[in-house]
Amino acid sequence: MSVYLGEFIGTMLLIILGGGVVAGVVLKGTISEGAGWLVIVVAWGLAVAFAIYAVGNISAAHINPAVTIGLAFIGEFPWSKVPGYVLSQILGAFTGGVIVWLHYLPHWDKTEDKAAKLGVFCTAPAIRSYAANFVSEMIATMILVMGILFVGANKFTEGLNPLVIGGLVMVIGLGLGGTTGFAINPARDLGPRLAHFFLPIRGKGTSDWAYAWVPVIAPVLGGILGAVLYRILFDQQMKPAYFVIIGLAVLSAVYAIVQDQKKKVKMQK
Image 1: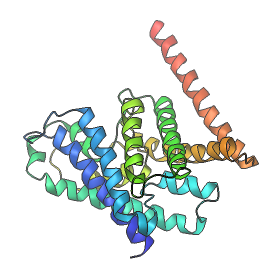
Image 2 (image 1 turned 180 degrees about the vertical axis):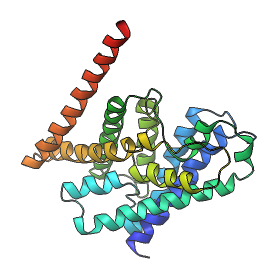
Image 3 (image 1 turned 120 degrees about the horizontal axis):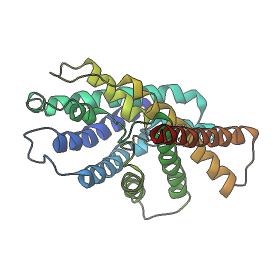
């Protein structure tokens, strides 16, 4: 099996299981309806672990463009393979979204809530503030990539690494996911969002393209930032490009704070 097919299958499995549990919780008439956020977060973590077990020996199971690009930026992955990996991940996520739709076919018509239907496929912020949402996704993905590199730097019992990374995803979801639904993966959000756009779902509403750029661009910057900080702090490597990334991250945070203060001033008037 090629590494690209491995990434396609791994990301597809991730979405089938992760998106599947969201569908089970939010769509009407399912046995698991209303099971709650904790069930969703735990299932996403286990979905990540299972996907890594499935294709880790084939493609290293990046299953996330933010991981692929972050590793390439610090020289841990060849740039020549990045386009193929990213495309495979997005196509796998799209296919996973279609399979989730098919699996829950009778439940779409029973569900009137357009946001719930969209939420099966992609993320949306609890409070819409693009700058703040961007920073939330950036921070969460930074922790993800740094955590993956931490795991890689330690020796675990053979076969345990995927579960540790799954646990990392769970704690990110519980600790940082309440703001944006923790996409932390451009393919996980964009691929299924495209599926939502194309699929014949009655009363589905818009695919929210106005927000779609946030869970794509912010995780990429966050993934690079996490990899860069790991290199600087733990490997003592200093490169000008690393500080450019840190500068962009700081500017994003400052801009979010300024926008938040402006909103508070407007509310007080």
